[in-house]
Structure formats: C-alpha cells, structure tokens
Length: 300
Ligand SMILES: [Fe+2]
Image 1 (cartoon, helix red, strand yellow):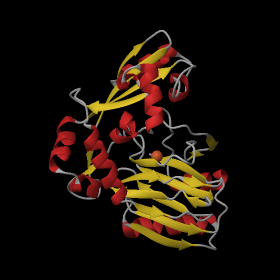
Image 2 (cartoon, protein in one colour):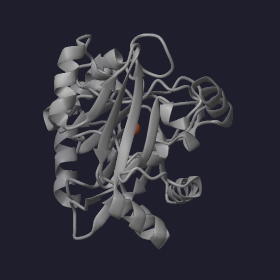
Image 3 (cartoon, protein in one colour):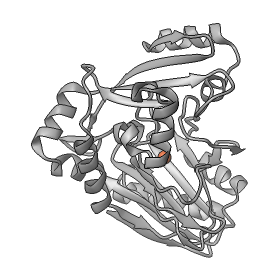
C-alpha cells in the first residue's frame, strides 16, 4: 500500500520533517508518495535526500544512468518505448540500497508511471513449484562486459574504473567468479532469490532474475543477439539458478504477469516524490511519451 501525503506549499525543511513524521507513523519501510510544490531539480532532490539519508551510490549497476547532482542520478536512460519490468534495485549485487527516492521534475505526456509491487504478495502468490525452486536454489547472475566496443555496457563503465588489476582484486574480494578474455570480461555472481521481510516474520521476493534473463528482451533484440553471439549464456546479462540449471521461460512469464497484476502505479506530477523500501517493494516503469524527467537517489 502506498501512503499518499500532501506536502504542497511546504518549504524543503518542513517537508523533511513531514517525511520523518510519516516514517515514524507508518514505519521506515512504508512507501510514501509525497506531492510537493518543489521544482524537484536534481539539486533540490539531492538537498532533500542528504538531509534524510546516506548515499548508497550506483557502482556496478546494470542500467544506463547519468550522475546529476550529489547522490542524484537519472532514473534510467532507457528509451521511453521500453517498459521496465518489476525489480529490486541492485539485488544482483553484493549489497543493495535500503530505500529508493524518485523525484519528478517533469512528468511524461502519457504513460511513464512508476509502479510498486509488494515482494511479499509476489512471493506468496507464485505457484508453489516456482516459489520452492527459487527459495531452494537461489540465483547466479552472469555478465559479459566488453572492453570498450560491443553490446551492452563495458566493464569500465559498469565498475567505474579503467584499472583491470584493481577490478580483479575487487571482484575477488566480493567472492565473484570472473575471467578475462581478449576483449571482454565475464563475471558470475551468486545472489538471493528472497530476503527476510524487514517489517515482519516471513520472506519477500528479492531478485532481478526475470530482468536479467534473455526471455525479457524484445523478440527482435533477442534474435539479433542470438545470431551474433550464438548462445544465450553469452548475452550481456544472463540469469540461472544457483545450481547451474536453467530457469524455465514459462516460469519467468508467470512471474512477469503476476508482478504486473499486482502493480500499484504512481502517476507523476511535477514536484512528486516517491520513497520506498527496496527490500519490501519491487519497482518498474511503464512506457511513455514526452520529456519525462524523474531523478533517483539510493540510500544505504
Ligand atoms: Fe530500478
């Protein structure tokens, strides 16, 4: 459930207090949609965010983003016609942000709602066989990152370094399996499928398997990649179960459609702020038209 708060005509400092009060009342894991009269520029969101949170950063992320101001990055640079499926931010990483802040400077003309999906509902409503397989096996996320020319992101861009030795040391310390090839790097990283619910007893869905799996790609993109690379496991991103077995396409389809059926959309107006716990909620975005400027910041 998203808590709607009217913070219009409030200055930044009273708004901060209003958000603190809401977290006190509804819990720090509550999803808050705050309507404000702020311009919600990256600078403004950064100020508000810094007064409430500590920056998590976005190193190792898989989606194209631009650093805008302080902790604030563009929500995503993916083209507007592509919807973004429900996911937990950086759930494929070694650590992940607790809360996500989205601030809307300019709403889209049509579509473009961000939507939240309860990780508890998604997990509990999945067919038992799917749920058990994910819970028991967990996941492996695989990346194939080129060295400057190729499909997807380069390793330099992904890990924000030009130094291969330094990156090797970092990947080793994180416990990732990796191997360097002539002009690309492959990384295999284990990740959870579920987490303990931080708000109560029980578990929540927490992963990005569906999004990393080749079955999430548009058919024409999938066809070109398969033709070029010859094997889905060589795609820039791939996900499989932790025991090395494939995740069935029809299971991923089931996860996708259940997530969409549980989606709670937030229709953006200029000045809006959306705050949610990344462990409790997945988020996604519908396709849109127009100049949508929604900025993001991730909290430790
Ligand atoms: Fe995201």
